[in-house]
Length: 136
Image (cartoon, rainbow, N blue to C red; front, side, top):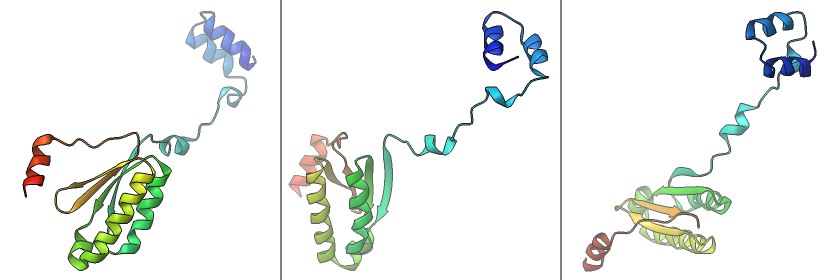
């Protein structure tokens, strides 16, 4: 019994037991397709990815992932902040320029984190929190 015949018998109302009995003598691999499950996992629509800035050169992987367009970056700036504030300002300016180029958004999250989103995502900014920041 061929592949199409077995499909026809399944859809025509033949019982599962009868179909299994008829297929025992035929090649069982003819009707199966092997799927690559690895490819499915890598096709995430949005990736939220943490990064740590320990020195200025650590921004390269952040910039590369932002340019791909599917990454929301959570950047821990505390190690660089404690080490060299001038390098931190330089790194933040570079991140801001890239964020503007990809039409994304960047915002501080607490004292030690920066959040960077691509163009399709936005950062919620409550007016109360913004007023508190402006008053300080």
